[in-house]
Length: 380
Image (cartoon, rainbow, N blue to C red; front, side, top):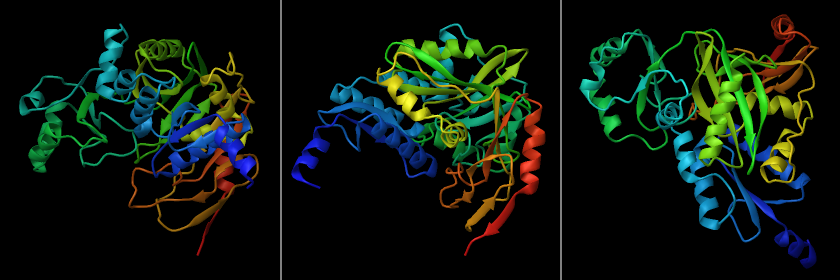
């Protein structure tokens, strides 16, 4: 590269991408980098005087993103708003204080907290991180009520370990909370891109959890719940509190016809970002342009009334495998990657594909046909 070319690269405005060692994080960084270059920006790992934005490629990088923005005077999310949105307990407190409906939850820190009389099913989950991994046996387990959870800890002699963790929680997961559990077949999802002045919804749909692992099995984009606008109002409240230049992705359950948030993420979801990329929709270019204020509108549209995204539920294997899908689908993940040493990194552990549908009832039949025709090869 000539001296003139090197000088040109150095003088370019740039963005900084922060992430982790997971495949999902690397995928998001790749898409952000491609979008940045399309818009004429360089990509760096740390800010300089030409940096115009910092973006997380993992929920675990959201706090550092906000801190770097504040430290270097770069427009971005407020650190306090990120700290609230990244912690389930803080987020539920915030939403309740803003007048939104939330499910019952509590953070137990002593034995008396497990002697309560809440007699409905609960789920135990860490305050921070996604819904696919917990470091302890009690994480993401469901119980008939709080008393059943206490008996579980006592029967397995885990009560001391549990409260030791609660007193000195691991920074990546925070304390464990228990929350009212709604045993619903479907989840509902809403995602929005938040800029400096406004926000735009990029996804409404339904989803289901894979049996066993707490990861999404399928998403049907374009099937919004009638109460989805209430979730958009919640995202708007977070934006008013200081979330800027970020993606807010909310998973919800339904009870009594209303939606209740259970998980809030500050990055795009793996399933729908890969579908948008495979469909050539330039999702990241649109998001980046909107967040940086280059576009007043978020010009993004899914190519069919319904887009179904589906994982094939195969046994986890640390060997190398490849899947050849049958006709009628858009392949999303055909090379499988699973590292038992990284149980938190499951996004690329199963085959994934998408199908375009005119009606929601077409999704299941078309997905079954694709799975039936798929062929799996073990690689050496």
